[in-house]
Length: 297
Image (cartoon, rainbow, N blue to C red):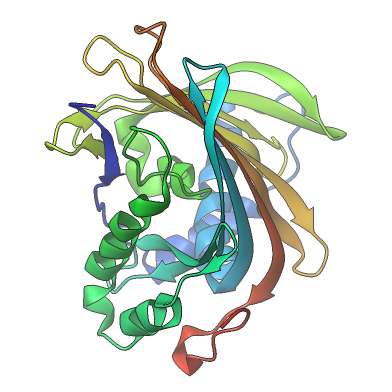
């Protein structure tokens, strides 16, 4: 690929204590009614994501099973791979967030340097964590199958679209309603309208994201997300990433339990396709300050 989906560009998220208090207050608004406007629901969604990242998911590590299939001409299986990792969110010094996929096994073979790499991040000042996390993400591309370079295949990547600091850069609209596992949701479509975009090609060219969120209108909780990158006249290669969230009883809030990915080129009928099904389990609290890394060795 000449223009490929690359890692997200850093965009700082600064939420003051006063702003956070206001958001928490907004999150406690009365449940949605038939008279609630789209603006009312989106306020709940923005508030939910802020509290979710800052106070819930940020202290959690999960086990990730990443199964990829590389299809010749979109049909015949050329190769498949299973990657096992720990997945954790890190808060940066500027209050933005990055996610780290700590790979420890590939097709049954142990990755020897995994614990040293994760400890290397935590041993450095927080001001350096972004660069170290980006380096880890790029290092992990060696485990990807196919010709599609990607570093945005993280389940929480799409949530940054909903951060309050970014809402003026994104166009949102309600496009429908749907029941998901017994939960009534609103379908909210989005598209990036201003740059610099969250994702870029390896040459630094903007890749505006588009997609949908399925949200609970009364709480703002994200039940499902879908993000599409590329598949346009400017970039024919396309990435589609769909994430499903479900309530985790041991934690008391929703967590990503499955991510589905598809990388293709709709303008090339004979192009290879890469698909992946990623599942998450064994959610547990994690405190980076102790460096007591739970899980595998």
